[in-house]
Length: 201
Image 1 (spheres, rainbow, N blue to C red):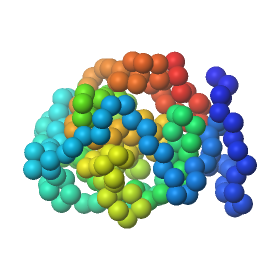
Image 2: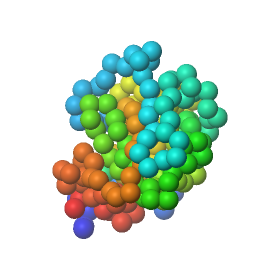
Image 3: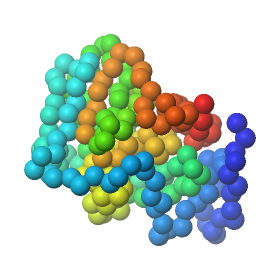
């Protein structure tokens, strides 16, 4: 698919090889806000994260338990399907491998559905999720995420368009077969690869 987005002139010193086709570099002080529906009002005393489905050891964590897990920093670029990119931000959270080791996905688990507030969902192949730069993310550039950007927890999958890094994460469901998530059912391409521009079906 030819891109409908035009690239503007880039600042001096920006490595253009890090910017996928059809993307425009966001201003350094700007992280655009995009989401469907209202921003949740989270009560941490009632919040939990469930990991379930095709796993040997289902897991349920409250927020204190989640934050007590080993943390990891990842410096990564992000790319939104609407055409903007940010480069070199520092993301902090729990490495997905910390979760995978605890729950032990069963051999038949090939996909993972992210479940979020208000019924939002998005799915990924397990082989994509199980990567060194994937986090259960709670901080950005040294500060907790803002509520608008997904606090208390968002999935972080920088190799995919950013809608796959689902905000307000509440669960991970391991599945034998794929199910399309919220935006994928509405025309967004399930592969979500910025370098191939698989934006829409």
